[in-house]
Length: 492
Image (cartoon, rainbow, N blue to C red):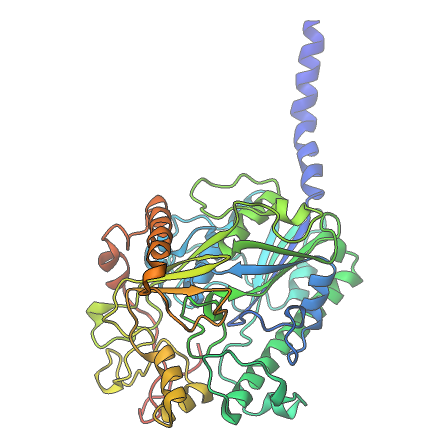
């Protein structure tokens, strides 16, 4: 009997690692595709009548379409930091700001997957913008020249995880590229906070043209996977890092800024043609990818994996406790009139019925100072809003009439401490009802839930440490300058 036990232990020692390798081989590949400044609902799968996104639509048709996906922060660097680390951006110190660094103490899912046997890599925009001189390994995995280059170097005995990045549809745009491609500008469904003008419609069409380019390049990647027999063994996830680079979109906590397209294809486990309404966050991606790979999720991750949402056969609301999501913003561009004031800290809770935003500094300009002559960075003008025809039109025509003035104020004027929007009555989130007596209890209840989550996750802003942690950290970028400024801003 003793010899039998010894022989069994010997077999486990010798063949155990091989068994583990076989299990690793059976794990799915992961292709994560993320567009830069692509917001909801600009895809055919969501009913947009103009933009053409056949690849995204295919992923949604052959997999699952998420109706309520949100980012942690509507700003490139913190949004991507949250995706990589699986944490709310406000837990990442100076990594909560645009043009910053990410502390190496934070684990990223590509590193965890690489350490667990995955072949990892990225192409074009992944982390950033900012500086990574404090990292030995890129937080998104090794950089490759292209997806084809990555696949050529991919060892076939390992599963892979690839970050398929894009700079589209970030500004700048080729003027009239949308119109000249044949888009019917009259059919564009503008956000209700945009004035309706040829300039604005043309600008949105040019944005659509770049969305379509991203979609086309993703389609080429999927064709490549199909040609080598790996498409159906790959979990394909497609999303954006935040809303479009337009007024009251990017760098704002309204749905136009923090809600993003999301679709996932995985024939092995996902029943095709499903639509899920659970409220999810892109910080959930890291724990989801780790769960798919059977890798333990670190306790620091605040995101929740949604493998159960992928594997469910149902559509609609899958899990009753996924009826709320939290978002926030710290410093985007250094856009105020004093460097000591930093950014415009905001936090929000979004439920099925309401959006409540808390503006911690109502005295600051939410889109940056319009007084570019006094800006901390010389010439930076409404710096939290990218320059473009829509921004210029809204500023130039703000005094044309009451409607133009209202839409200018919604995008650029200062805001009260609390904003409350009722989804059923106001899906465009234009009418702040926070001061109406009948909504007093709603504001109190939602703010209590928001505050509890911020405290639970140790948000420095709610703990009174925001100035030191966020406001005073070094800003490493520039910003959009007024047209009269002698210095020209280059695209990030």
